[in-house]
Length: 387
Image (cartoon, rainbow, N blue to C red):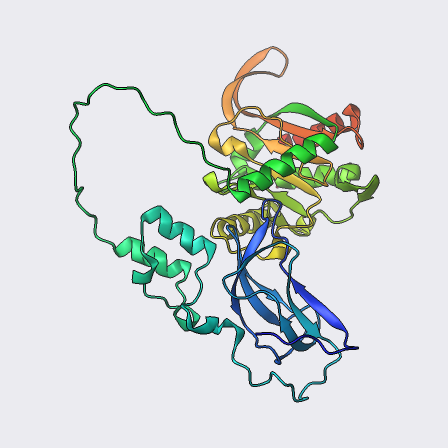
């Protein structure tokens, strides 16, 4: 299925991309090109799938596809070489493998099933051989299996247990290994705790102005906009620390933590978030979150963040100490907005929508005074919101 590059040729490698901190491996779903085909730089070469993302990988350079290293249906680690491109080849030049059969023929076997589709099928007890595939060469897609689930008739239970049971000792629960995703999340969190000097600072904010302005929007885009404004005042927090080298970034690439339920989490990035209004941030965050849960993010959308916001408040959480998303130096945590009595205007008591803003920060880079100043700035922008 492959042809090694000729001696003296320059080779560009197509590798399994990194698609989020908790993604350790991916599966080759379909090769878009055959060995011997000419490809342009940034032209799609292969489709891959992980538990989080189904995406297409482009060629890093123009040239001829000289070698396919990983076959369709094979799962490999991030960074593994998938194919090699001969960048010294000339367009139109005949090639020994020009008429070779496509690499994705699979030697006559059925098209491969992506991990996402396989997981959905297992959850619903579906035999994938019974699902009509509408993808290329009859491949069963996520849309196909979801449609099959929706149209399945509900089956009557085959056996109804008696409410009366013979008493006996309960069997000990059987343990099972953590999923790859959970292991990767755990490894990253432990590494962050071992690397950064974590501290957490908390301020309380009155969200009355935001309550009046938000309409049908959530609180998150307003907090994001306030945090961006504060990062402009205190740019040291919009930074990354790697190998004792601190890089303070001009652009704010805002990471938004998105829960994938029991599957884990992913942090898509709103690039150049400083250029967006709160309405623009709301639209962009909603789009990224929707595609994250559908596993349709591209690799470029899950890396390169400079500051992260997480929002457990939507689930009712009141306080948290978030773990810094490496190699960033701080992470902001938005908690639940709760109406409670507060002292206002001296000695008066009023009912106001209040929240806690919790920020974990790296004491190697920041001190408590700067962290408190930053959070106070975020609070000020929220409490004095004028649109």
